[in-house]
Length: 396
Ligand SMILES: Cc1ncc(COP(=O)(O)O)c(C=O)c1O
Image (cartoon, rainbow, N blue to C red; front, side, top):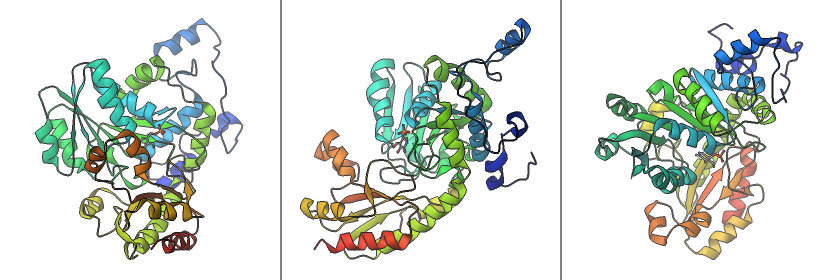
């Protein structure tokens, strides 16, 4: 296919061999566990290179492959491997980069279960050492390095407080020392941020968020160089048995076609809402990397080409009853934990964090009781603003 085609065009057509499926404009779902061969020679040849041939769907499946090709192309990677969840993708990427006894540097506000994987699971099972850093400056990372540091793990913007890391500078620091880098790019998506071009080794996503976009799939993906992805596909994907269902892949294929247009609309709605909240007297502050008032706005402008729809704001009140009155007073915003779908959601991080953390640990994360996290969906922005306005009016 013509190399000059733009992303929107590639997402419609790239990786699809329509002649092979009777010209069907939507590829069929290859809902089969195995593939048959004409003779000994054919199956023997397939076993020569399992990364290129369809043999058994725990390995490679055509519906899954179409999606992997499209995602790799979109992110500017050589190859991609889909996973049945974002955590599956994160675990596989981390395991690929480390061995027992290695040291990992990660930012302190990474997605909770990724933090648990590093700090609770791998430290015990594989004797991994972990240092968590704020990650605001490259010096944070440099100061944490040890002779056995093998991996730096980033999430920019981070999903809890939207902290940014200087991706290019951290990637350079790591490369000079032969340290691998992983970034969770779920917030920005490859539409608004291209970490592989900035020198990162592996980009991971929860496709359950914007890439899926319809709140009907849980899936994940790892993108990177062919050598890394082939190794992950053989080892962590096949040996740990993390098979992606062809139907889930097919739903992602559907979603990818509208990803650029959805992201533009999420951004437009989110900007309007962020500006409305920022000037509201009952709102103390808004955390959204797209606002000029965001402390790392300049860095965001440097390394992102746009902003998605996840943000948080702090209510002026710290009275729990009032906070609940606001939270329960919303009609259009639904209450739920995930984000990145078509529907607008609200969640208060305090609900889960206060169950898992001591009040001191909670305070140390930079989050407070009155922090509201919203995922701005694709409804009409004015309806969403009216909904927020009405719920804010209910508190004093
Ligand atoms: C930033 C981030 N990364 C990864 C994940 C994990 O993805 P999944 O739920 O698909 O396993 C999530 C899920 O909420 C997330 O918010």
